[in-house]
Length: 338
Picture 1: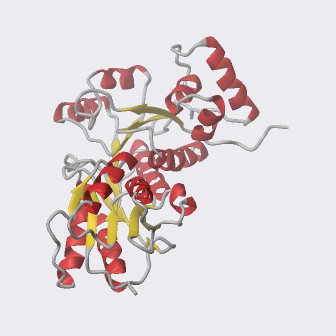
Picture 2: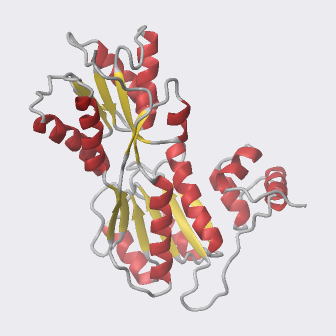
Picture 3: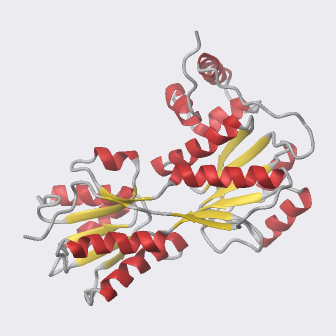
C-alpha cells in the first residue's frame, strides 16, 4: 500500500537533495545523475506523488514556475508547501528554481528561454521582480505572473500577494510597550526591501505614538538570516545603554539574537525580551518559545496560486493587490518589566 502523499520539500529531505532536483525529476529534465534520479523516483512512487498535467486545452493550466530569491530557508519551504498543495489539487505541475546572477532580485536572461521551452503556463515570483523587458517578453508569450511578497513595486497590471507588514511592526512594538519596556530596539532586514521598511516603519510609528524616543544605534539592519541577527544583537549589547527589548523583523534574526544573548550570559526574557516576525516552525520550538508576528506564508502562497490559475483560465481578478493579516502570537520570549 502506498504511503500518504508527501510534499515536495519532504521528498527532497528524504532523498537528501534539493527541491529543484526533485522538480527536475518530476518534469523529465535530463540533468540529474541516474542513481539520484532512481532514488527520487522510488520515493515519488512510494508516496504516490505525480506531477499531473492537465489536458492541453485552452485555459487549462498544466505547468507553473515558482521562482524564489532564496531557497535555503524555512520561510521558502512554507511558501513551497502552500503553492504545491493547491497546485496538486488542481492537477498542475510545479517547476521550482532560484534567482541567479548579480542582482539576486530577478531571474537572469536565460530564464525566459527556459520558460518558453517547457511550455510554462504561468509564473509565481517570490520576493523577486521582473525587468521591464522581461515583463514585455512574458506578455508576448501570454504567460501571466503573480508576485508573492514583492521585492519592489510590481509593474503595472502585475498582481501581488503580501502581508500587512506595517501593522505587524506596530503590533510587535505595542506589545513590548504594553509590557512596560521603554528601551526597545529593532533589527530590520535590508532597508531596500519594502517588507523590511514597512516593519521598521510600523515600529517607529508605535514608538512615536507612545512618545518614546528611539536612542541612537537602536535601529539596526540585517539580511533576515540568523548570522545577521547574531551580529546586530551583539552590536546592541555593546551600546552604553543596551535595550531591554528587541523586535527582530524575521524569526531567523530573532534566533540569531538568542545565540548572541546566550553567549553573553543574558537570559530571554528575564534580561531582554525578544519578538520575531514570520512564525516559522522553529519559533514554537525555540527555548524559550518565541513571541512573534505571524506572517501567513502558506496562505499567501495559496492565494497567489489561485490568482495565477484564474489568470491562466482567462478569468478576471477582484483585486490585483492583496495583503493578509499579521496577528501577534504571544509565547514566552517576552515579559513585563518588574
